Length: 606
Image 1 (cartoon, one colour):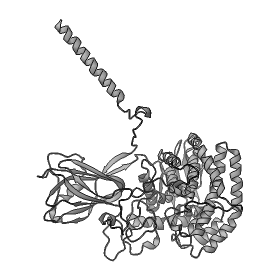
Image 2 (cartoon, one colour; image 1 turned 180 degrees about the vertical axis):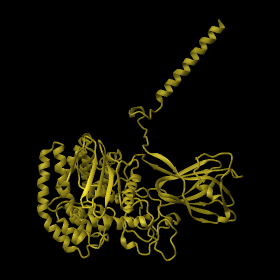
Image 3 (spheres, helix red, strand yellow; image 1 turned 180 degrees about the horizontal axis):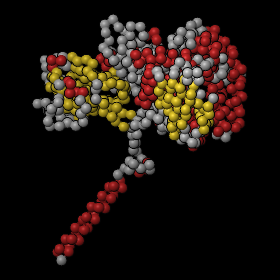
Image 4 (tube, rainbow, N blue to C red; image 1 turned 90 degrees about the vertical axis):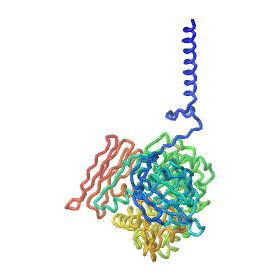
């Protein structure tokens, strides 16, 4: 009887444990489930983490107090061990403290990991870490004068490293990291130092390859620049701001459409800025940025064809269109309020801004006509069409005022207005290219609006000129050691400038510390800015020749313009799959084209 009771008690006990386990399992968040009700306050990160080994030692101080620095360039596994072999040792004594500066080979977004060993003392040891998008930024102090800061993302900090452990810290954009031993009379054992690259693990579906390796690298660099900014939301820069700026998004979205195809970061970011900007407010406080939001909605629909998403935006789109219509005067001139802004270099050119805003508002009405017809708002579509015609009639007066104000077409801020007026059909493309946009080559270009200047040159048929400007302007950043494209760049900065991946030699200009303006002075200047990626989508659209004719890429027109290239090949993502394209210039001067597209995509050729 006792045995039976014991077995019964054991059975009851096991049953209780199993029931308790089932209850715990039912309470555990179901992270793999799409049903957010199971864990309403959780947020799942869609990014991955990659640990990057440094590629070289740029600089070191007090080498007599270091041993084993070569071990820092071994692959490693991120795991401390009891062997304590292959250890880099940094010693400080009597106030003399060593420092090292590491190069991780390319710009990344993320932080740093340090794996430590077993010095005799088990006390935590303090180090100072400084991130830099350039060598000079990683070497600088935050002094209130040189632009360096810890705004938005901490890039200069102290951290304690454990005895025989792993420490991780940081969330910024950088390529270089300086590590200083802070504590005195200590011995720090380092098994590994890795950069932690945080990014979306997504394939590059689009591609571009030609007989010009410089153009190929520029295409790739623009794609990589935007990829780094595709974090949980679509940022403008990974070091500074890290915000959803809608105007910045437009060239980024065009690059995403050409390289990655559909990605959730675009609608997620468009929704986020919409939700914090109830009408009647301007997105980011800038009237033109609300216009860019509308233009992105149109372009995103053409590339992706997601009607359900577009329908979900209907109320805001309709409300925004009606709101924008209030900012046209009786003669058809724009009178937008809020911050009147195109890009930073044009900030001191009110006539260029007025011309650009007139063009943007016309483009907005054209897009409104298309969107409202798709959304079943026929009456509003017709109203937008009428208003666009009225504004076009007012364009000659705006254009005349703009041209009259222009003293030097190659000066910063002069070319932006002309580019937008060309794209809105308010100015003759060839005239604008010859007398304004192409004057003095890439002088007067900007990283943001340079994309629209290139598009205006393409409209004028100046493909060779556009290719030359891409090589000169964006290529110059690569020549200076860039692995991503910058917030702004001016060819006037080039003379006597040192590369960003070296200690600035005596007598040379520091292109990071010595230049910049507006909100990006000196080291505050962002060296990874998604709005600078324009050549990537431009090369895919005009050289590879991919033009989206119908929403969702159901109809594609292939119109290549090789300029001085002998051949080009590449791929382009659509919702139905990837299109493969190649163009070769034959001996008789004709272009031989081959296209392989999904069966759902109708390909037109000229």
